[in-house]
Image (cartoon, rainbow over all chains, first blue to last red; front, side, top):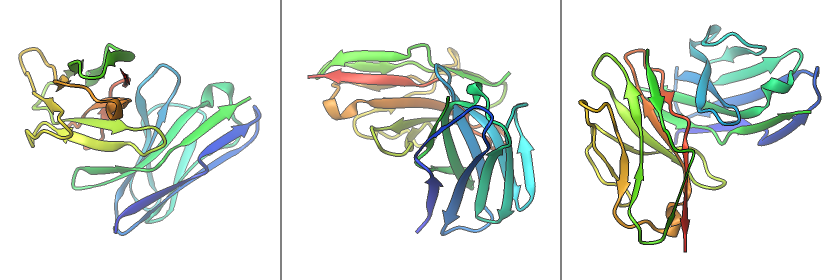
Length: 110
Length: 108
């Protein structure tokens, strides 16, 4: 069956520390992968999407980066977190316009 | 510009009352619209899509191109409907655009 795993569920990190959030997909090949973020009082905003290994497109300028080292692995990173990076991060994949979402990571930068 | 607007951050109703969660969109082409729902401690999941013209859990949504709206409705709210609801637009790029989300609170 098709599933998506995202971890950790919650994370509290100090300002200036690095970040690595991981998302893996099972049961499908060559999916389109997405990272979304919901900041306080705002909707889900698309941060990055990937149509294949090593292919990353950034939707908005930010302090974050993404990588796709394997077909079913999508990583969200930061070298130095800012307070404004706090939010709820969702990984998603789509095949033929059907979207499946991960369980999300609540990141609090303190 | 492609945009989805959900004007209400929170909608609170009593059990049995009608519910309407508002969604307006801005898109120059033919829109493909969705409602997603996230129940407490669960994943974001698809509730319904306008193409299907279906009713899920008693909810319906009609696309009104004249008013550029896709409001979600249910005649009699249930406590288990309490959740966060997102309206979303899928443009030709294939990248979902979400609204800000509306928290529906159904009180007993």
